[in-house]
Image (cartoon, rainbow, N blue to C red; front, side, top):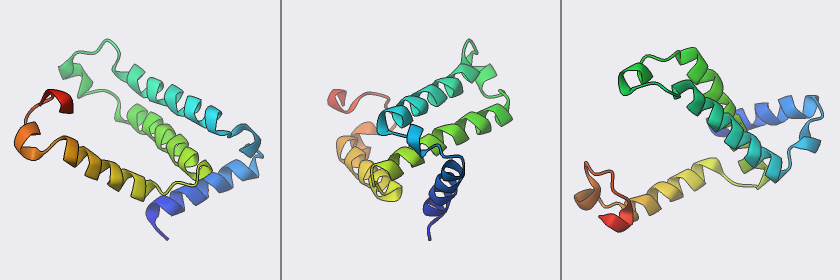
Length: 112
């Protein structure tokens, strides 16, 4: 069993013990993921670059864990293999952002 599958299994167990699967449809999981990502962003709101490196790491851990949890649950709901879809995305991004054009640049692929 992979680490990702172990985490997903624990999330599903936690959810099922509380009878929350009824609330975990695709739309609600996607919305919850977006809300948790916003809560992560809120930690950095109104901070300058120097301050953003010294924010409370416990708060980051808390919100990032929520983001991962809803992302894993959404992938599970849709029958998606997290490892596979992330590796596929890295490959596609490698094609869109070849090292010789993208290295050190923040430009979007269509501007390289």
